[in-house]
Amino acid sequence: MNLSQKISISLTDDPLQVDKVLSLVQSDGAGAVDVFIGTVRNNTQQRTVKRLDFEAYDPMAAKEMEKLAQRACEQWPVEKIAIHHRKGTLYIGDIAVIIAVATPHRQAAFEACKFTIDTLKQTVPIWKKEIFDDGEVWVSAHP
Image (tube, rainbow, N blue to C red; front, top):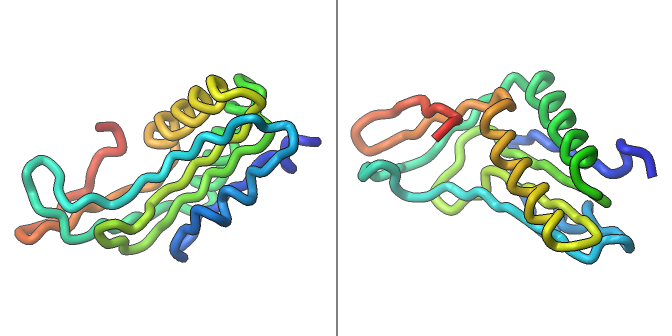
């Protein structure tokens, strides 16, 4: 299997679907699938969040997501990996990002998935604005 057959990247305005992402990482060689689902919570730093707006420079963000998936494939025995991120306006409970990593064993799946979400927040040009009852603020990707 070549690298492009292992990787699924999506940056979309449409709602993300966990079942769809899981089906994309199915592999007969995988004994483990680790999934990270990032959702919109109703508060941050003691302020009530109404919604989030995600913006991206799509060509660069997709390219960086692809590079990130390739790095995970180089560092761990990844059978398949999916990185799907949502843009636009999201409300409490909406899914902002899904990362799914299939590997032969669980430890590699855990490590590759953690690496992918941590690095995505540092390197992929996707910006988040938090909208509160009393204002709004662009948030650094690095907590």
